[in-house]
Image 1 (cartoon, rainbow, N blue to C red):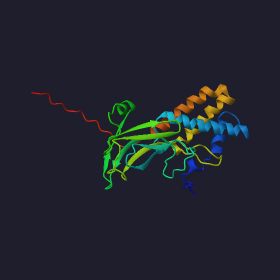
Image 2 (image 1 turned 90 degrees about the vertical axis):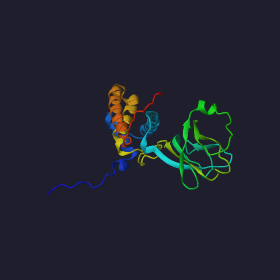
Image 3 (image 1 turned 45 degrees about the vertical axis):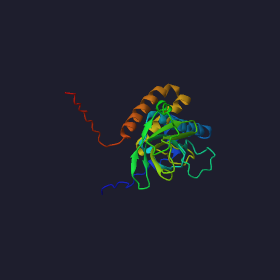
Image 4 (image 1 turned 120 degrees about the horizontal axis):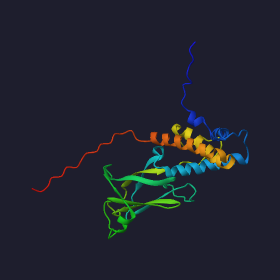
Length: 242
């Protein structure tokens, strides 16, 4: 009689935080951990997720949202955490950066906006000029992210929207029974990464080897975590004056 397969592909969501911690401790030779050791591991996992934010763009954390424009208002705020205390029902939380944006009119026709840096925005002569926005400037603060438009929306643009793609923060670990806010491709490097972090506290002699394994698995996951669309490079043709 032939063996059957499980018929499921849910390991990344059934593999709870406590099992990740158990797996990481076992990799450095520790079993039966409890109490403070569990809390230390959960804290290390949260720190590691924040460190992943410095590793570049994670495509599973890219989301889409829209801002409704207000007459005479150029700057709009999004929050980096859910603990900011605001009661604004329209606020967007967990935002880390804005990647791209378009101006969308009442007929749902989109016009691309150009992202500019601080120096370019500072060089604009009249930042309060009203009209259809064509550029935007993003500022990333400790607790919030703001997007400032140029031109400033006027009464004609009020009620239209800015549709944008943004980078979300990876969610905190939370309860030990939670699943993690990462795709299945990152489960191997998550376990090896936590083992590397814990080895620094409990088994320093293993740290170097744990780091090599972690970095190797993380690089493979990052390489896979991308867009499969094609890119085309076309040389520009110049016509010299005759």
